[in-house]
Image 1 (cartoon, rainbow, N blue to C red):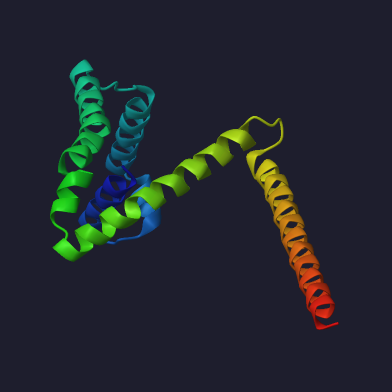
Image 2 (cartoon, rainbow, N blue to C red):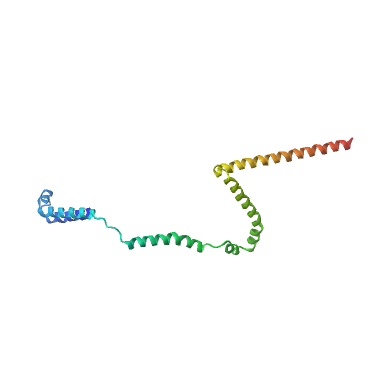
Length: 166
């Protein structure tokens, strides 16, 4: 609206032969134009034009198409595991089949650890950290016992060798 007012003002200024701003304000035609423009501008700002119901329906329909259709399209074009496996070369298929059981065991162990950690009242990362510390301590204890058993076996053999040498 301000651009229109500037254009109207410059049009009226061009019609004035002197282009003197003081004479422009005194001109009744300019005063009428400015008054009419300001009234029209204030009336325009007072009325609020609401979009029609069809606009709302179109917007909701478009949103539903995007929200539902986007994931549906991704689901439709994503290949299944079997389709991906069929595209493997025979060597890769054999390798994947050979390692499948071990990967499944690892995954089941991981899920079991997560379930065990989720039973705690603590956050899962804190519970996981405690479980890792306990597991590490148990592994260290097992290594110590193996080392002690190996040392005891070594001493027993040394004693046997000494006894047989006498």
